[in-house]
Amino acid sequence: MIEIKYPDVLLDSLENGHMILDDKFIVSYWNRWLAINTQISKDEIIGKRLDEFYPDINYKVLYRKIITALTIGTPTFYDANSNAKFIAINRNKVTTSSLKLMQQQVTISPYITSENKVMVSIYDISELFEAKLMIKKEVEKVHKLNNKLEAEKEIIDKNIMIMKTSADGTIIDISTFFCQFFEFDKKDFLGKNVSIFKLADESDAIYKELWKTIQDKKSWNGELKYKTSDGKEKWVQSRVMPILDSNGELFEFSAVYHDITNEKLLAELYITDPLTKLYNRAHFDETISFIVEHQRKADVNFALAIVDIDHFKSINDTYGHQVGDEALVSVAKTLKNSLREDDLIARWGGEEFVIMLKNVTLDEAKVIMEKVRANVQNNKITDSISVSASFGLTKYIIGEGAKEIFKRVDDALYEAKRGGRNRVVVK
Image 1 (cartoon, rainbow, N blue to C red):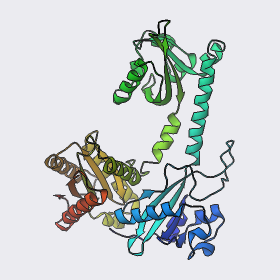
Image 2 (cartoon, rainbow, N blue to C red):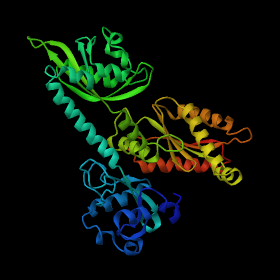
Image 3 (cartoon, rainbow, N blue to C red):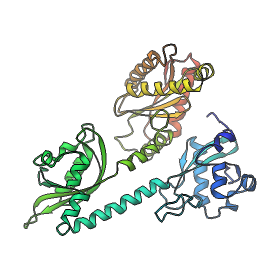
Image 4 (tube, rainbow, N blue to C red):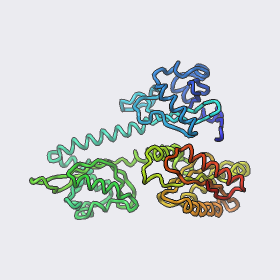
């Protein structure tokens, strides 16, 4: 694995925290963001053990995460599902919520493996956390209002998105606020089936789950993606409740919705590479780790490819980094457009991309990658600039770990580059 030492000026310019630790928890770097937010200067902490300053961290967990990152060569999350903070940082932002401590997402990435050093990155996700709290409060508010539906019908009609349907899904009533949100007149809804809101490319699985749940006379809670009258996509938090007749049989359904479009877009930012708009490495690692850990039959039939743009450094050196960024964006678009809808692609870092081809044999994957390689070669970055790319390709072997498949695909990519580049090598 290539080991890169990040310059201080780069890490100090980032709007998030970065420290470098070894497996003894000795701090060898502490960026400006951490110094400002913790009130602990670089001079105070560098060369000392982190537990001298933050004894409440679970160092058994931290040690395990450090060793995992160094062993598999990819980032890992520190207690991603825990409510505990990694280090306590007071929030400076003026807010109406009771959230006084910064909510954090912490990743641990291999840095200098020969010295057992990792980079610990701290991201402030307080706003996303507040958004979730807001959704929870709003949904609770909706439930309270729904309990008073008859007494406060006019208030609800103007402020809450509510739909009532017959047992077969035919819309029989809808609130004014719902009509305003989806930009329809009420007459355009009544008598239609609720499926008119479903996006054509949306998975049927969630709707099958919803329908089965309510047919079993149970309430269903979940997120749905709907469309407005002019085709705009909207996300709503939904609660669908069955209404039974005097004999206990399904009679109607009542559904309450809350707009979570902005929250979903914010969450999407955390898994997206800002330049290419592909998934980022952390999200791809999480996907691979889940597959390797659970070994579900529907997931493990995939091939993995790593793509490296040939001679990318010369583009930056000759034309400048702006043209280099244009090349990255153009290649990313070409790669994505050349793949099938279910395939997964992410920016791996620098000029590298990683692709998961789902439900393929190795021969089928080779055909797809050859097509992708040709598309990259034929694509024009500008009138005078084009690029090629080298591809390493391998098939996942059931039962192996992430380290093994990434080692194999890295070896294939190395052979492709050593063999003259602009080729696909299979391992």
